[in-house]
Image (cartoon, rainbow, N blue to C red; front, side, top):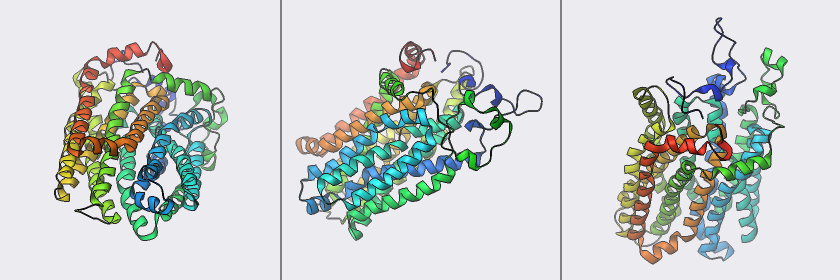
Length: 487
């Protein structure tokens, strides 16, 4: 990313779009290239992106669904609560790890064929889960469904980078994070009632059917966003392609790309401090959300509350409301703050100008964690717990979007590779917390653990202060090594 030159009110777009995209005819230059996703009609961008975001929603419903089925699994398969928890923790881990495969595949084959293959696989793995006859078989199906769901994770911000210029990315990425958090919060509500009224297997059938429907829609709506101008057929570019030809599975194929080189680039990107900060900050925010959900489920199904499974799902509505309230603060506001700083500081847009948007969610989110923990510890009325839950969810959605948008601006040329590191670390943290949170709480108590969680999240957010002041110098250093060398 060329951060040290140019005087325009936005990022120098020379490396983000071809020379034919700057003008729209009228004698000023070559005509606009309509094959470039940045120049697509808005309706085409929306249908492509919203279908992918539906996949993201289902992928996150899939990752959180068995949090409300622990008792049913223990009863049917005669396993421990820890074993039942592995259906969540290992799914979450492979949900992150799967990006190591999907992003390199997208570099070689394009995004459209990968999304369609992954959606079909997610549907099939949930059919397998629904028909599993033993715990080990179910665990295997859950691991495979996590791998399939990963295609709707770190890959999506790269689609935004393909279609949207920097001044609008925060808003578009917030739609992705709203789909993500909706899966985390609305998913347990849906699944809790399914488990209560029809059993846990129908929870898997629901996901299988929903994924199949989105796959059918995606066949006709998901367009290939990978743009390879050097490989475009000259005749194809001179005339407007038919609608059906735009749905070819070969538009994103790049014979010059390499699966193994992309994997190497992903691993090399782990040496970039900005990405490690983003990964840790998002990881603790999402990880604490898993602890919140597991703690709420354990607390409210026990005395003195004794809630049925469906009511536990209703509590997650508080989290969904919190994520909805974050839509503007974590989305459009990021773009507005960045543009204001750009104009105030001479007209050159820097990724660090997005970081001040962390101030509001950086206060609300940690305070919400503390309120939730103290209310649980003192067995207060559920309303206090719900308020803390909503505040924490507000923080998850907004903080995650600010961090991802910052990472995307820093390393947009290698967006997919960079974000894999973030999401793998995020899900590894989530897996570890889902495995050991119960022991952590049993050893130290709810109040102490949630106090420590608040302090850790606050410390991670405070690291954004030196990044704001010294991030440009740090990015200059990272241009000397790794996959972003010379950018």
